[in-house]
Each structure stands twice: as C-alpha cells, then as structure tokens.
Length: 286
Image (cartoon, rainbow, N blue to C red; front, side, top):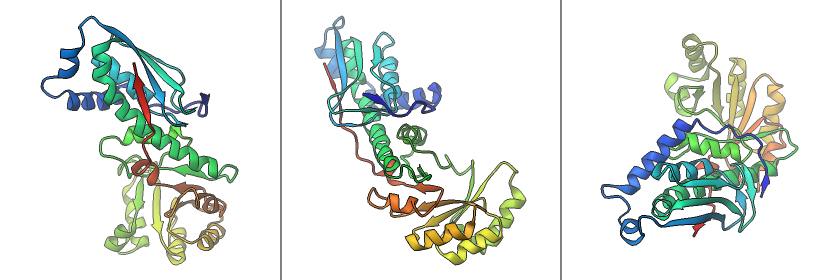
C-alpha cells in the first residue's frame, strides 16, 4: 500500500463518532446482535483482517475504527496505512483484535462506511489523475447522502480533490431558479452584496456567454459554467481574464474531464463522485 495523500484533514473525532454511533444504533435496534450473543462464547477472542478485494483509494478507516471502539473499547484496531492511501487488490487495510462478539457486531457498520467512502475517494483520485498538469482542481458538490456530507467530502479530500461549499450557509450561490425568481443576475447580486458580510463569497451559475458577461460586469467572485461546450469554456476563460474564478460543471466523466480542464478553467466539479461512485469491495476476514 502506498501513501497518495499526505494530509487529508479528517473531520473532528466528535463528528465521526456521532455519525458512527447513529449507524450502530440503527443496526443494533432494541435487542442488539442476537446472532453473535447466542452463538459466540462470551470470552472468545479473535483476530480479523480488513482486506481490499479490489484496488482503490482508501477512505473511512477512521469510521471503521470508531465503529469497533464504540461497540467495545477493548477491541484493538491497527491500520496498516492511513486514509488517503492507495491499496492493491488483496491488500491488508487494518487488523482488528479482541472479543469476537464485538468484532462481529461492529463489522457491517464499519464496512458500510469504509466501502462507499473508499469508492468516492477512488472515483475522485481517477479524475484528479486524469487532469494532472492542467492546473485545474477537482471539486465535489452538495449532492451527498443526507447526514453523511462531512464524511463524503472528507473522502473527496482523501482522493486528492477539494471541497465546494459544505452547505447553504457558508457561501452564496446564485442558480438558475434564483435568477428567475430574483429578476436577473444583477438584481440577485445587488441583494446579496447588500446583505452579506465581507467574508462571504458569491458564485453565479451561468449557462450562456450572455449570462457570463452579466455576471462578470456585476462582480461575481466565482462563476460556474454549466454544461457549456468546450468552445464556450475556452471563450469564457478568455473573457474572464482572471476577473473571477471559473468552475466548469456538467458532463464530467473520465472520458471528458481532461479536455474540460485544458480549457483553462480553475475548477471542475463533479456530483457523481459522491452520489454515484461505486462501492469499493472491502471485506473482513477472521
């Protein structure tokens, strides 16, 4: 296993624990793990291995560790490499040892975090690799599973990507429906400038060169170029001349992402890396 991302800025342990605790409570229900309680002797101990069945970028080991620890603090969890590492198929990710009942009780919740988060990290890493050398960055969106945004955005960072805004409250983004309801880009920008503090940045989503011109003229900080052709993306970069940060979105796949990045945009955003990334197959073996 090789380290691909040196520093992934994990969420605070209190945030991770809250998410994992909720998942455990959902799984344990009213009576707990009745299968393990009735089939495994109370004093029996075991050693288990978390193994990557397929190659990928790993994210969510911090969640897996929390799952076993919350079930039973005496369970030992030893990661073979940190989140953000690339693992080959068959690679050992972590060793879990302690009471067998507790390991079995925490197994599914641990894997339910580790597989999907590693899938997001793997999908992100593939896009990041595809645009290497262009100067553009891959970013995620708010298209995340309810309740799991912090962890999914952490997985994006494990994949070498960057985060867009976390919610509706940390940056202003004028989308097509805002433009229609507010009476235009100029009106929406004017209202935001009048009501926001100086630390809040404003992004405007545009789908035409005419809208881009209006957004630039009224001082948008960032402009999202939505589903524009490569020709229009290049034209937008030439028009902006560094006046605003440019983000391209729409039809972003492994097949298209490099051409999009090569137009000169600053960021390429993808919702698929959080809402549609395939689960990375990871298992726990006694």
